[in-house]
Amino acid sequence: GAGVSQSPSNKVTEKGKDVELRCDPISGHTALYWYRQSLGQGLEFLIYFQGNSAPDKSGLPSDRFSAERTGGSVSTLTIQRTQQEDSAVYLCAISGTVAYNEQFFGPGTRLTVL
Amino acid sequence: GENVEQHPSTLSVQEGDSAVIKCTYSDSASNYFPWYKQELGKRPQLIIDIRSNVGEKKDQRIAVTLNKTAKHFSLHITETQPEDSAVYFCAASRGGGNKLTFGTGTQLKVEL
Image 1: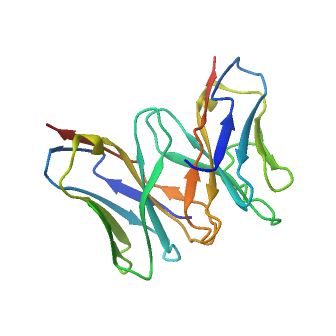
Image 2 (image 1 turned 45 degrees about the horizontal axis):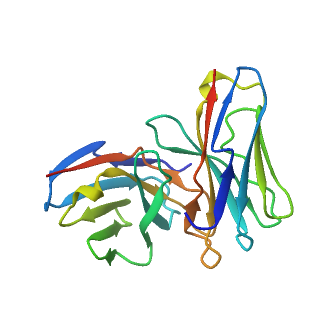
């Protein structure tokens, strides 16, 4: 998992509260992705940012979810009014600097909504 | 949109045997097919990938084959070892930085 960190590693929150998850990539990776992995499930695409292009938000499950990427580097995924079904591991990925194909994942944030 | 199906969902093999995991995809514009290995509690790790201009790629004990006409690709692990035990995910993408669509995963168990 070279080149990307995420914080916090674990987050426990109460239903209805807002949460912010952070992804911090090494500079030089123009594409950044957010995925979600529910317990025992596969990976579900949420959103991705590439350079100065408009982000692809097609995977966001509801308008409670939003993300931004400031200065082409750090990204924040915000979930408003969290629900129990939001509980999952949220993974950030970055693309390789050359081919823009290979995606490398960060360690993830485990979100638990009580 | 793209749909990726993966089989089997679980696979148990004896140490030293080969393991094969198969995936199919629906989007004919997909041209990049990576495989990830995920150990329990860890992040997915890219282990091998293939692009649509090649039919097979090998890296030591692992290989991936691609049949674009049939829209399927497979992961082959030879001489399996206990440390190969993990969940393996296939994925497909249009490349060029596009999102990955993942299969549902295969739990591989290599028994001594």
